[in-house]
Image (tube, rainbow, N blue to C red):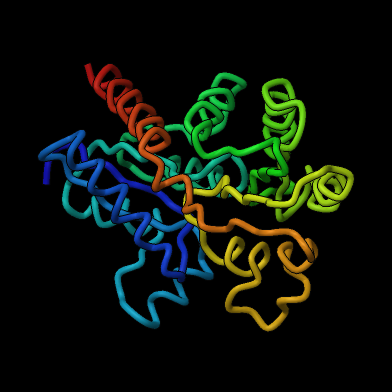
Length: 261
């Protein structure tokens, strides 16, 4: 193991969208050949669920403890979350409790500039006008950091005055508001683009109604008569988005080197 391993800290998923993590790891290894990449998952529920199938899904605390036992003195933790909400604060708490000197790579959306860059990365996937509309679907949160979604929505409206909407599964901007706007539009086709690192259970169940016993409550079912495009994968499969995370990781690595001098 190298002297400063990288820990990718993700929420986790129990769905087939786990392949997003392997895609990210391939891009990491191309960008940082020879560097050690470890994985940690911040969702206790998903760790418990996945460890029933295949042992090895560790919390960040467990990964840091293992590194301590190996004599590691420095590490970089890269958040694979979208906003600096509850899960990101778990990372900060774990980093503050270890003896290892850590530098944390920030999540995807922390500023207006980040929001604009993400929209640039999604530009070739967003369709609007001529009977087409796009809904950018975030996880959402009731944490104060959820205000970033409102900032993103403001930037979206400035760039796409019509037929592109931001909605989240939990909190604001609400699906009810986006659905009402769709109902008033001329859209015949609605494309859902995940604003989540992986297009896991929320996209599959809450949005598309796949693999759930409550399909009637899915967003797709509430758009009867419209053609739905739900084929988009999570942000972790977007090369430009991955490049943003890797840039955040590189900045954290440089910070760690600076602090060690």
